Image (cartoon, rainbow, N blue to C red; front, side):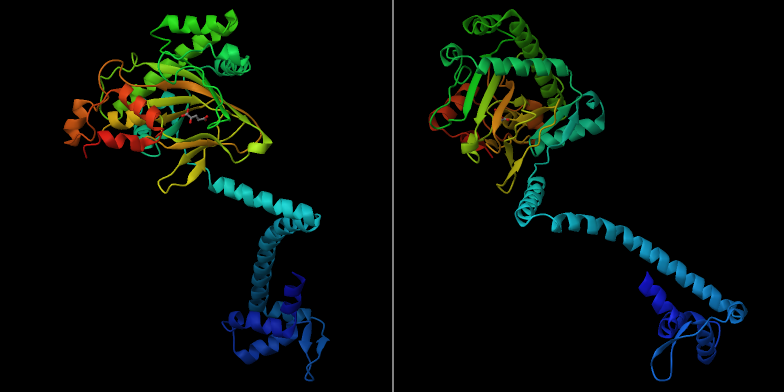
Amino acid sequence: MLVFVFLFFSYPGTYIVLRPISALHGTISEFHALSMNFTPFKFSKSGLLQWETIRHGQLFVNSPFLLSLLFCLCFFTSFELFFSDKATIITINKSSFLHSHPSQRKEQEQEQQSNVKEREMEAIVPVVDFQRLSEEEERKKLRKTCEKPGCFRIINHSIPLTLMADMKSVVKYLHDLPTEIKMRNKPSVPESGYRAAMPTSPLYEGMGIYDMHASPQAFEDFCSNLNVSPRHRQIIKEYGQAIHDLASNLSQKMAESLGIMDNDFKDWPFILRTIKYSFTPDVIGSTGAQLHSDTGFITLLQDDEHVSGLEMMDDFGSFKAVPPIPGAFLCIVGDVGHVWSNGKFWNARHRVICKETGTRYSFGAFMLSPRDGNVEAPKKLVEVDHVQRYRPFKYEDLRDFRITTGKRDGEVLDQYRIC
Ligand SMILES: O=C(O)CCC(=O)C(=O)O
């Protein structure tokens, strides 16, 4: 500001700034004469800067000049204020950076870079409001997100937060049981029971109950084999019912978004599955769950709100972290969802990577396929599309093919592809 004031009151400053303005009011020689009267600083003939008092009389006589002066002062002041604000911000950040120790500075730099990277690397997982699914706009959003990226967060759902928290405690308790007890969680269909950590997937441990809504015996067996307390039994039962209701309602809404109004998902079998990832400092960067697509129609997951690790693969084959949203579920479309929708819904490829130390728990409903019969697109959908993209197949065939070949991503569907 001082520099501007100085320049302004010096003769060259006055000349440069005021000349274009004052030219409107008189000739250049008039301007020269007036500015000489008005400016307290001026260059002498020898070129030295010298002081000359303002002659107040002149100031008032030459009102066009006064107006020009006021205009310029206002301009400079606002200019300076505008930049001083930003300058302050820059100075604070810069000074805290400059005054830190070089090693701290390096850490700060790295932290800033990794924050930026982390933000850039986050998957865009759309959020769908369950309560608003009666509205056209929200249904369109649901359809779009099922098409790509094939996953979404669901908020305002019917499951109470207290039940979600209680179930998480039960899941922790169950996974902390001795291995010989956990091994009593026998699978009723492949991949539905206890899976211990293995050399090929040392960070992963799973447990599950198959078809508990249609088979109360499956639930009873699970609880009695693992000596589950009455209170924990109650929580598992309530949670199992609630998540099955939500998963089947959501599946119904997804079908409706394609114009299929009469498909009932309530009878479709599901696995209530729990997963524990043991993330220790020495395994940072290792795989918790290999790249895969889920086999069923959808997976409705209560993923860990504290320990991250889930990543979605995008169209370019790069992985994006899925940030948690506490209280929301994550819905992922599976292979059956892709085939059932005649290729419209995308079976999202994902994996879990150890990124931080801690124990990650994920659990929820794995909605599989029609109880009896084939996996195929509804006739109405095929009629509308004029083409059937996959030939019908049994869910069990797909599941067994994946298990025997070890192929886990959506490419396994190619064997059923028609076009
Ligand atoms: O643990 C997670 O968050 C993801 C689990 C998963 O990939 C799956 O169950 O398909």
